[in-house]
Length: 156
Image (cartoon, rainbow, N blue to C red; front, side, top):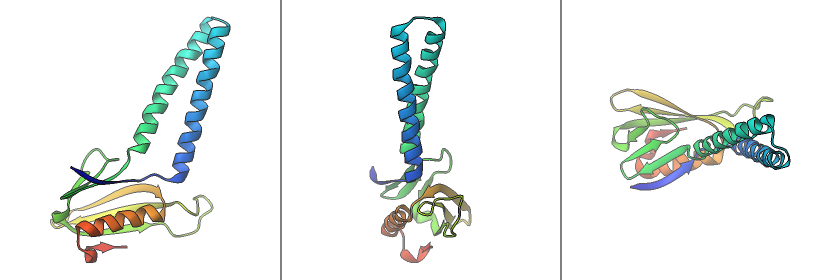
């Protein structure tokens, strides 16, 4: 039973995906207009490629929007990872978070690269790269984690 889902999505990623989706759909409208104006092999080929691009765009947007962390009663799941994505709260020894704080001309000043490092009681360490995200999203994750595990196990 899903308790809470926190989407890990950078505003920059959202802007880029939105711009790409608008461009793909714009070219789709252009391809349909050309298809109705003149029927030639080149226009049919362009329209077929455009339909393929629209399908790929929808799948990529769906994948980007579903990435995050699902918090359940007894475990949490990182939805952007295929393997080793479930962690039981009882098995966690400590959780460390890392968030870029250095100013950089190559990175946005609001969005910073973030990691969640989970150490289990059997001494296995798993590093989850949640990518560019805001400090607010990382604070939400820490707040939700503190509801499920002891505060002294969460290190910043």
